[in-house]
Structure formats: C-alpha cells, structure tokens
Image (cartoon, rainbow, N blue to C red; front, top):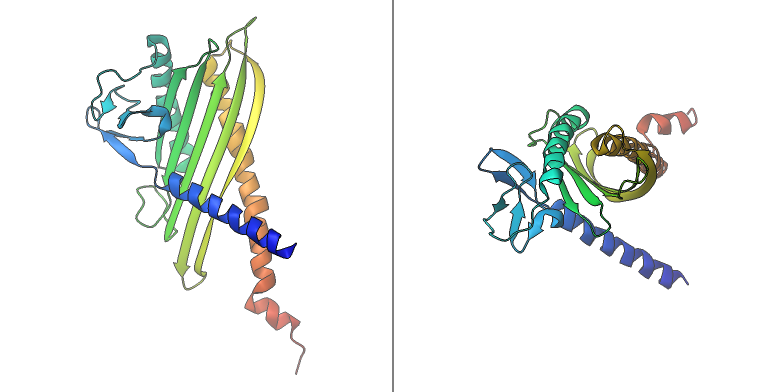
Length: 240
C-alpha cells in the first residue's frame, strides 16, 4: 500500500513539474508596429504564427490566419487597454494580453493572460526574489444574450514559482498551480467587459487568498515544525 502511495505522489509531482515547465517557458513577442509586447499561447496561435492583440497582425506574417469579427475586435482592443491598467495597478508591471474569438454557440470566448517576472532582473517595480514568475490565465466562455442576460463561465489558473537565495532565508524553491471555476448569469446592461472584469477581479482575490493563507501558510507551518526558528529553540531549552 505504501509503495502505491509513493508511486502516486511521484507521478503527480512529475505531471505538475512538466505542466509548470510548459507554462514557465511561455514566451513573449514585441509587436514592431506599435512597440508593445504580447504573450504567446495556443489561443492566438495559427500554425507557427501568433496574432498580436495590439495590431491584429500575425508574427511571422500569415495570410489566411483567423481574426475576430469587427465587433469582437473592437471589444478586444478595449479589453486590452483596460486589462493593462488593471495589471499595472495590481501587479505593478508585467505583461498582459487579451484574446477574443467566436464559439459555436453564438457567443464568444475571451482569454485574459498575465505574466509577471518577480526576479531581481525583472522589469517590474519590485524584484525581491532571486527567480520568480507569476502566470495567470483566465478563460471566460460567454453565452448568447437572452432577455438582457448572458451566462459567463470563468476558468482561472495561476502558476507560481519562486526561488530565494540570501543570508536571511537561505536557498528556497517553491512552485505550484491552482485552478478554480466560476459560473454566473449577469445582466449585459453595463457591457460584457464590465462583467468579465468583475469576475476576474473577484476570482484573483480568492486565488491570492488561497495561495497566501493555505499554501504558503501550510508551507510555513511545515518548515517551522521541521526547522524551528533559533529564538523558539532558545525558549524551549531548559535553564542550565
């Protein structure tokens, strides 16, 4: 029974490690037409080219690559502008990209991506880690409008990896991922972008709390149990 448990844990670890490698290697390109970077992923890829959300052009150029409809493209442009402000306020740097496309149910799908490098060499305003990366993926399926409402299905995934290397903390590596889903029926009076933004903001708050209180909290508890701080050890030692 113990051997089966060990193999299960080992298999899960390998699966998570491979998934983190795939996402951590997610690259970015610079759109030469506007000088802005965008994130490469499967949602803006066709063959070996990637569509920029800023210029709506493929890099490298692709003649017959799919593009969103004019109405959806207008919403995509607005979403990228608003999400860039959101990313700057919440993440203080990083790169964001938003991609929209039609689905088969007369609705559309939106993908919101954020990539933040938190290492010492990062371009953000803070870089306390030796190495660190935060990748957030929010995919929202928006159903067709019915009686002034639409159904929204949000699937969010956050992948986090960090490494510290200094005298106070020593060398420490931590990586993992968390995924959650949310379904809501909302009025479209304020627009799809407003509804999607509120859902993403609420979901990211829940994910950050889970990472901070559950994952980091449990890790800290385990580390302090295995290697208690020096001052705690002194308190436990009997007086000589």
